[in-house]
Each structure stands twice: as C-alpha cells, then as structure tokens.
Image 1 (cartoon, helix red, strand yellow):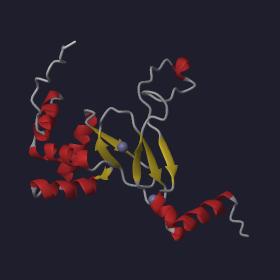
Image 2 (cartoon, rainbow, N blue to C red):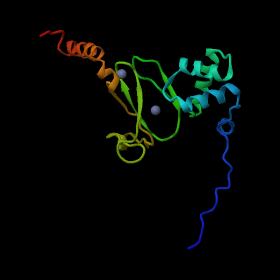
Image 3 (cartoon, helix red, strand yellow):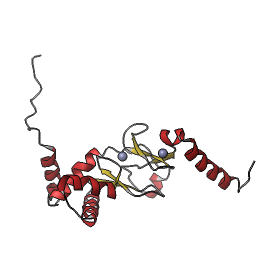
Image 4 (cartoon, rainbow, N blue to C red):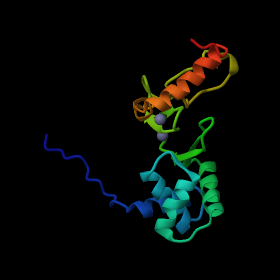
Length: 175
Ligand SMILES: [Zn+2]
Ligand SMILES: [Zn+2]
C-alpha cells in the first residue's frame, strides 16, 4: 500500500534522436538521409523505394534515388527495415518493429495491410518439419493473398482478374 511504481526516469527522446541513437548502436553513422528515411517510413509503412524518395525529398531536399536505395539496403542489413516482396509488385519497405506481424496483399492493386499473429506469440506457426531439420524457428512471415475491399467494389477490376483466373483454371473454357 502506498508504494508508487518507480517514476520513468528516462526523459522522452525526440523521434529523431531515438533514430540516430538506434543507428549508432548498430554501427551506422546517423546521417541526415538515414534519419529522414527511417522517420518517414515509420509514418508510411509498406512504401516503395520511389515513395520513400519522394517522401524524403520533401524533408531533406534533393537526394538521389541511389542514395535512398543505399540507405534502405543498409538499414535492411542491420534489421531496421523489413522488405516485403509481393510477386508481381514492387518491393515495399517498412520499419522493422520485431512484432512478427504478417501481411494481407491485394493481388489486383498490390495494397498491403498488416495483420497480427493469428494465434499466440511469435512465430505464430510451427513448420511440421521443424524437429527433423534441426532449425529453431523464431519468426514466421506469412502473406495472405486476396482482393482488397476497394478492388472488390470495383467490379470491372475484380471480374477481369476473376475471369483471367477462371479461364486459366478451366483451360480457357467459356460458358
Ligand atoms: Zn486492391
Ligand atoms: Zn507491415
């Protein structure tokens, strides 16, 4: 009774300082472009490299596309950025939050939506072959493919893809 939880002594760091500290702790220099990319990505998950370029240019002025690619690649290497590679769509990037979330991807427009662990904690799924392979699994990345609400509402887009899918499955048979 009357025991107060210890006050949080650490002052709230600004987002920029937190990002800079994170970069340094991983052995990367906290350059303006790296900080800008990570900060922008935090607010815009599932962005393409072009999106990142456009977003970062608004914040730090002129920066080459190659410089942004280099930052994304370096940050992916140290686990600060996660890459999502939906087949048939450009690679997307997001901040790696270590929350083991999965993705719903629209096969029509490529929209990506986060979905959390379906059951329990990471890695959510245990492969049937795990014991035999000797692997210790700590993460699972699942992609759920489907059609987003906007594309379903857009009849033409949905029917076009549905027809293409059916004709492929039916060997081109038409009713
Ligand atoms: Zn869609
Ligand atoms: Zn995500």
